[in-house]
Image (cartoon, rainbow, N blue to C red; front, side, top):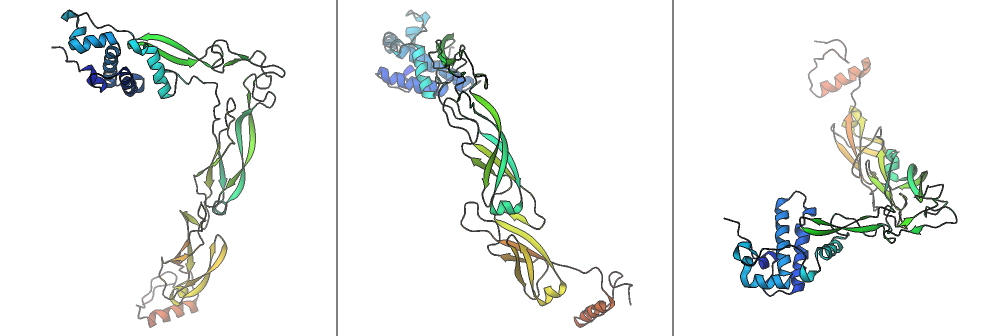
Length: 379
């Protein structure tokens, strides 16, 4: 048994008695939604697109619509005696070419599978990438660096026209200066219109008979440049800075692209970074940990005093407020966190050992010693 067709009004989401404009609007919406060019390989969308086309062909033609309203699908069934379904244009819609041209305007290009009909209009230049390596301190406080880049620039001799001095380009007669041409071809879905670059002018819209000798008619040349880049305070390793307008030159009066500079930060021998915080460590003596002391610790701003309280344990962490990395967008700085380690001496003289034994005895510690920094094991 053949598959039952859906009602054409239901296919287009319309009620009986819909106006021609409503039918056209519904078709545009659904054709845009299900067109195979937008869903490559999707059989379901392809089937729905065919169903939408069939419904629009019938309802968009006043004569076919009258037959359909009276007899339904049987009006186009060759076995029902009314004559078979005929493909072709959309009656009052003006044919496939106009419909797909309208859809091209919706999508922003000249017909399915084509490109913009204004290929020779202003176009922004491409972005150019570079990299720079800086120190930990430069990343924290900012600096200015120079990077070398190769970029495409407007030809200084012809000012981007591509023409030799004293000459001008001719408007392409094939595309009338638009840079694109329309072609119409028959497809399984009917006559379809597409837009592509003009083969005569290559999409530029003009013919240059006497090209500039410097750029050979391209209007652009490649140059190596050294460009100053301001590195903001607080930049982190791997982040990218955008320098507006320092990329490749645009086309047909379009703006230049941007220069994108990726920053690499060298590791520091004393500091590590965690977001806006600086991490460091410091060794103190056993006596300093027990009795407390004032010591000096290095920071990004130089050495500062840190008070070690009595009874400090190994691994204790102290915070130095405002001694971290400046916030990238301003408004203050992070903190520095200093982790304390106890430095154990590797050699002691006899008097130092005796003093340590006296301390151990006073603390009630066992007096048995192992061979090592205290010498031979004693009983």
